Amino acid sequence: MSYTSDIKTEISLKQLSNDETRAQLSALVLMLSSISITSDGMSLVIRTSNAPVSRAVYRMMKQLYEVQIETFVQRRMNLKKNLIYGFRIYGNIKDILTDLGLFSSRGLLEKPLQRVVAKDSCARAYLAGAFMADGSINSPETAGYHMEIRTADTAQAGFLVNLMERFYIQAKVIERRSRQIVYVKQAEKIADFIRCIGADRCLMEFEDARISRDFANSVTRLANVDMANDYKSMKAANAQLEDIRILQEAGLVEKLDDKLKDVVMLRLADPEASLNELARLYQAKTGIVVSKSGLKHRFVKIHDLAVKAEGKTDE
Image (tube, rainbow, N blue to C red):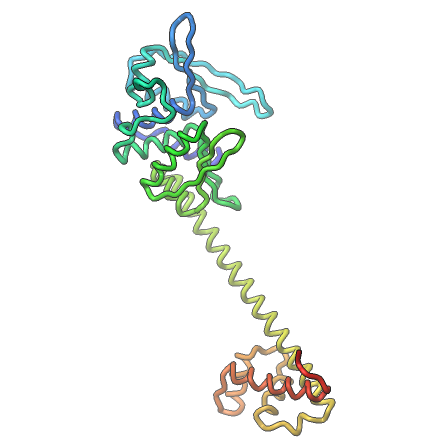
C-alpha cells in the first residue's frame, strides 16, 4: 500500500465518540456523496475507491442512524481500472443531512455548520474525514514533502484552511482542473497534520524517515562545504606558487625579508597545505605563533612584489 493508504487505513479504524463520528461523517458525505431521486424516493449515494474508507462510512452510518444501506462495487473505466465501493443509503435523508450540518432552512450547504466542529476533537475528526475522502501525502522517502486535500469549491477549501489554522497548520489553496486544492509543503506542518488527525503510527514512520533524510542531507551539505573549501585552498596555493615562481625567476626571493622568506619556504615545502596548516607548520618550525590572516597578509605582499616584478599592476 501507499503511504496515503496507510494513513487512511489507520484513521478509519479509530474509535470515535458520537460527536466525533458525526463530524467525520459530515466531511465524508459532503465530499463523496450525491443525492439521487427516483421512484423509490430520495437516497444518498456515496462512492470511494478506498476499501477501508468505505467500511468506515458504512460503520458510521449504522452507528448514528437507522438507515437501509445497499452496497455496490463498480470498476472505474480507466487504465488502472480501480474498484469503486459504493453505498445507496435509504431513510430520512433530509434529517441525516440536517444532523450532519449539511442542510438547513436555506437548503443544502456548501460547507457544514460550525456546530459540527465546535469541539477541537470534532474539528480533528472532520479533517481526518476530509483527508479520507480525497487527501494524499507524499511518502517521506520521496524527494519532496507535500500534503493536499482536493475539494469541489472555494467554500469547502476555505473551511478546511480555517480548521487547520486552529491547530497552527498554515495551508494554501490552488486551483487544479476546476478543483480547489488545499495543500501544505512544510515537513513540520505535515507532521502536525498527521498528528492532528490521529495517525500516530504513520506519524512515527514519517518522522523517522524525515530525520534520516535530513541527517543525510546535512552530511551531504557538509561534504560539499569541505570540497569547496579544499578547492579554494588549492586555488589559493597554486596562485601563491605562481607568485613565488615569478620572484624566483627574477632572483628576488633571497632579497625578501625573513618573514616573507619563511612563508615562501613553507609553501614550497608543502604546496597543498591550507593556510591553517601552514600556520601550524610555521609555529612548529619557528616557535612563533602566526594567525591565518597574518599568513594571508604576507602572501598578499609576495603577490604585490610578483606583480611589480612582471611590470604589471592589479586590476
